[in-house]
Length: 558
Image 1 (spheres, rainbow, N blue to C red):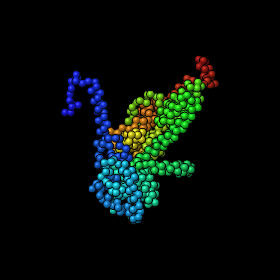
Image 2 (cartoon, helix red, strand yellow):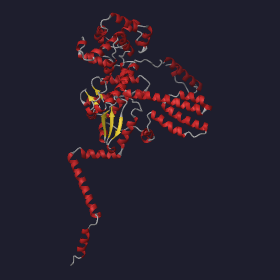
Image 3 (cartoon, rainbow, N blue to C red):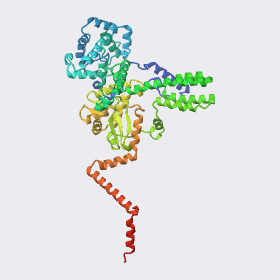
Image 4 (cartoon, one colour):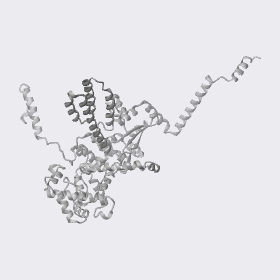
């Protein structure tokens, strides 16, 4: 037993020894712990390996890309095809091959490419072998996307149909990635820009294709669609240039709405800083130097809002002038730039729903209280919309539609693994959306309701299999706490409303059975007619016949 673990009597232990033991333990821990990994293509976290079958969902079946699974004997067949596909892509030009190898083999480039992976998995390869691996893998990916993925049988060579399907799956595994800059370098050397096909290859994954609009809507909105198409094309090109690898590009395409909003927020933050610094220098010269430095270093949006409020108070106390006109003019503008509308601000004050766990259950329970689901027009997992309908009894929740097939589970698990390897929790939209579906889906009936609504496209098999899939993926997953916060709050309020509960009970009791509905309708009509009869009997207007009747009543003895 180590000395530090041996039991000692309380008389032998002093306060100084306790303090020193804590300090020494901290120093030893800092010395033994490895620094935080900054690799852009990491390994799968141990948590997912323990929960899910690693070999089934995270290991390639047909082709290895990168160093992690290079040399696997099960993948030798496609490994032998890579040189042939490389020469076909280069059109058998040996000079182009030499130029490409020399370009990728530059010492600084090789060092940069090695930094994408964990160090212990690249040290076994010398620079020349590592460059050869990058060259063959990148050319194979581009050949597959440009020719084989486009359903051209003459380009498939010895690859069978089932192997082609597995290649599509393998190219999106976290441990089977290659830096995207290698693909860009190859396309530049061979003068063949495959960006459009790469984006098309990415877009056919996870999300369901958008339903076609009606013909007359197309004619009315053609100009608007053309403008939005140009903006969307620019956004796709920007995502392509900023992504590290194919899985990263897929993740960005699935969460593009949130990234665009963060970009707008950064732009508004810079404008806010300029306005705030200018006002401080103009009105508060005595304390402007340190205030300006503080404001310019403030990056967090919530902190900026608080700093703005605090600066307004400082300016008021320093100048002894009422600044409420400036405050009421600029603070709402800043809050609107952060996406905080007056309704959302009032929602923050509703403490009843702020710190409360959301207890709504599956889809069928929400449908019973008048909540209906429909596919969202925005192809992003970060976008969920809640909208009220007729008299507030019926509401709609728009969810991004997804396709469920044989590769959905490995795709989602590898996207979740990618999110778990990074510290930005607000970007974990795949994890959050998967957890939301896990909450909404308990059995096949829930899947059936979402399938009829167009939110799920079931290409896997039975609805029960889809329900089992999401329940298994959601095991041990923790979503981002603020994900879909406003939509969840509104759903919870509607779910707990006594009016909606009563309406749902009446609908469940009488509307689903036609005979019960007609009986209820007949009873309501009879009750209404009875009320009309009672009203006209008691409060009917006086007519000329009433005097005649009174005359006969008073003289009936004649």
